[in-house]
Image (spheres, one colour):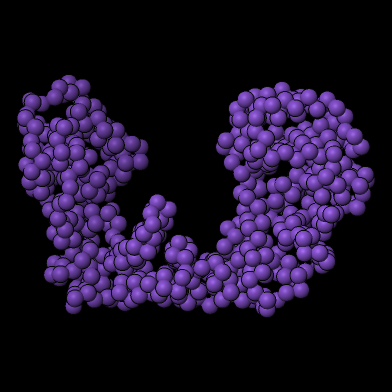
Length: 595
């Protein structure tokens, strides 16, 4: 039985009179010219320039994701080198060499599967045969697919031949895992990275395929297939083949969802709207309905991840991001939802979904995990960055929070949401029930820095630096005036980390700038590490975890944070010491203690 010839992409496929000779779409629409490699223009240009300038290397390595054109490019390069009219960047496709390479039957173009021919014996056979000149063509070309599957011994056997092959031999390697190839092999090849193909390019190609097949399809159906392909043209064509086999009439989005087990866009919108509306019951009902209808919950989770990705992109670009992998009809809805959520909240939700996806692979309780993720997202309040909390408390701002409220953050543009009759902290802030942090007290009166006023002036300098910087600066002794407009801060040797933190150029400049604002005079600040004060304090017995917790809760900053957020201490990490008053030692828990 003769083998059916492949046809170029531009021409419609021929009808197969015999069912056994049917060739799948991915093979019939395989690229036959460099110009037909979709999404690989940079690679095509580099190779065609090498051919026209007669600078063709003896070994090439094509790497990239599956189905992006690596093996097709290798065959096109082989045809370009061995075409009867070549070497040429446009092989004719009709001569004996081109037709045999297209069919995979050319005697001088040897295609080897690296997965099944990965031993050293196969490579030794190649080494013996490279000395033989090609039978009829210009070059003897070895195309090794999935070359990373070769054994270490096989790679070692290939090294010398690969570095100095005979002039009539060319090697073309293709792999999806370039990290597994030894550096000694990589250094002997010209490497070309094939990027994933964009959804828009795959969609346009699928439209051409449908025209060649004389079939009709909704644009939304083809977009669904293109998004599902994940950047792989071969995956997209295989999915399209499956859809064409499943339906007789026009290809619709409903058919694609039914075959793939995915949820329609309206269903995903309903689940997301229930989550963002803080209604876990409604969201669980929608998830249960998806399960009852036989949808693949893993696919539904992937769709939610894509949905939250769209929220993130729109939030980062203030709604101006145009290339979203979501139906056009839902873009405005997603844009409104992204404006009602803070970016930190969206990122936290995306992290919950991604973690659930990772856990889904190792369990048979996929529905339970998805339901847990949905409930967590529904109960997630807007988040306040820790830096904002620290600044807020250090400035003494904020009115007393209404009893029963929960932690939250300011989400611009969101409507106040109530839970059990109370506003969240973020909504209380927006509604005016929670006062904003007052600005620090300012005065136009300049301070005179002398030995008598040094203590008060330095305290005001530290109050302008923020919690973290001020705390590290407090580890030093009171600065000393050592010269004209010069201060020196000495850190005990055991506080070398605080010394390194404060003497960093940017932070030192900030201290000097604030000092000038308060005094009106430029002061230079030097930092020194007091080596004489490096001996440890008196040894104190290790304190218990309960005692350390009680001592930590005496810290005003920690107490203020717990009060503002109505929180409580759940766990104290090992190594969290208690800084005691001057003259006492610093209590550090023993390693064997469990907090």
